[in-house]
Amino acid sequence: MTAGHTAIVTGANHGIGAATARALARRGCSVLCTFLRVEDQADPGTPQAYRDHRARDATAVVTAIQEDGGRALAAEADLSDPATPMMLFDTAEEQLGPVDILVNNATGWLADSFAAAGTDRLGRSLQPVTHATWARQFAVDAMGAALMISEFARRHIERRADWGRIIGLTSGGELGFPEEVSYGAAKAAQVNYTMSAALELAPFGVTANMVHPPVTDTGWVTGAVGEAGQQAAR
Image (cartoon, rainbow, N blue to C red; front, side, top):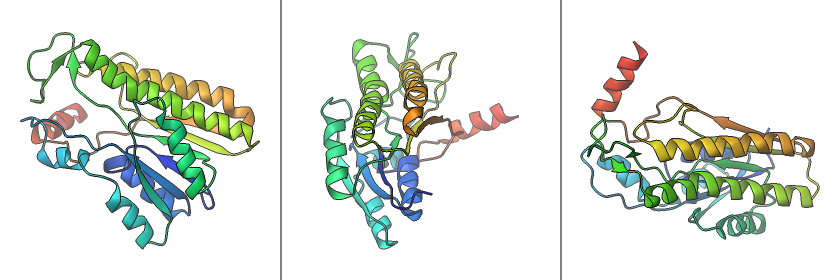
């Protein structure tokens, strides 16, 4: 289905983004793997493995794809910069071909709360909601995703393409996300942007969907997180 297509996958240096990039490549898709290395401060509630994953580039992902015979390249980019979407699409088009698959996976994740108490129920550092926490979260999860969709749509329509796919990743809830309130709100905005794109771009052969995966251990699941998940499942 994806053979001969070109995809941009954001946040593709580890976790779900890296797995998505490799899955698309196995199906014959050329992939631009975008990433932003983040040096998180030490946190007793966050495993070192997860901090290491967020601090690395996408070289390993691209190498694995190429060793399997696929086409991929990496691009470090900050989605909070409004100039980034045009740069990423230019890079992909010049080296891989017109982009017809967009996966908005990257997040500026942090934990903040209206009733900050130092740590959340899982032992992770918790910040009060401030302009800084709001701006960091919304710049990537809401604005960044919206501008990537807009750049995708503009180029798709200009070249009169008739097939395209937009996929967003979320774990936010419609009724709020306690202790990750800015993350939940930003993801709600991304859902709204993506569903609007589904309606507006359908006449041009584009589908747009949000995926809400269950708890996925990409290095951040501690014993406390695992126990909480087990209790919720009972």
